[in-house]
Image (cartoon, rainbow, N blue to C red; front, side):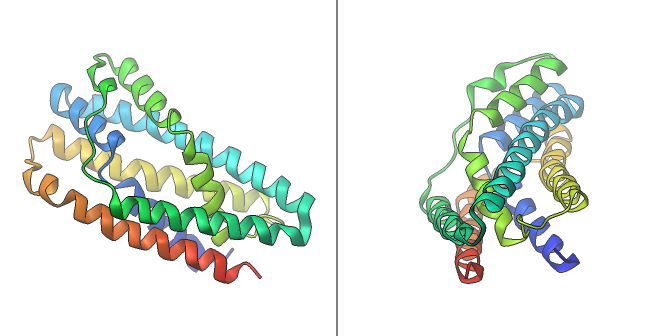
Length: 204
């Protein structure tokens, strides 16, 4: 895994973390209602849950790669197809509605809300398990490389959420953002679909 692959993975993760979603709406809602500190709490919960999913995906897929050897190519094909489906899903999906967890009030409650909201999206682990093989040789990855991927994941997921929290707490209007959020998701969907195709192309 070279520097270019790390940057590519980081860009993909940032774009997806910035997508209009239930987690983004939760960050905005809590920041608007109670200030930036609450937005940070929600964002921290989201990052912790994503790191849990990413860790499970990295460990699980590295074990599978070691057990299957050359047959791991089949797993990469499946992962690539999943990413292509997910990209198409983003392209076709309509506006995201607010999440009921946005009613939490305390800082701790906001952290738990962000964590549970993300944890409730169990398909996230399949997303990470499908994405990582495009950038990491899971069969030969070192502990340092795993740590680098997790660090990138934390930054890529956390920074966009914190940016939303800051903007919302500063009373920045999101009317134009709301108007174009479907288009933003469609562009990101095309990128994810392309990443899935890249996984399939690199599989042999």
